[in-house]
Length: 68
Image 1: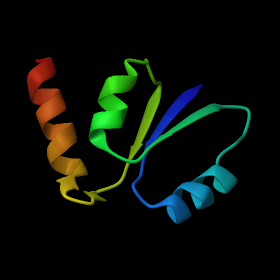
Image 2: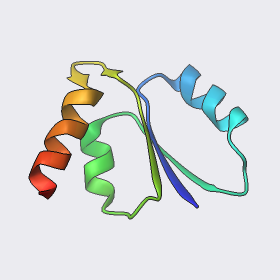
Image 3: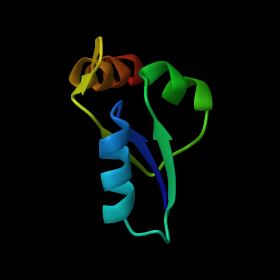
Image 4: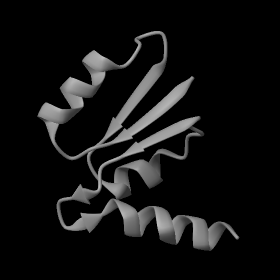
């Protein structure tokens, strides 16, 4: 399983890496821009709500709005 983790805190990224099963492929991103530029398909996206000057809820809402 390919899991994308969109989290701007390096401390939280490390905690999540320790919690998640290492049999899965983990990709960490600090910004929405990094995630969008990756152009990879992920089975699961773990998304931080507050991403510095961005909002994870607004990002996912706009992504679904554009998909339909």
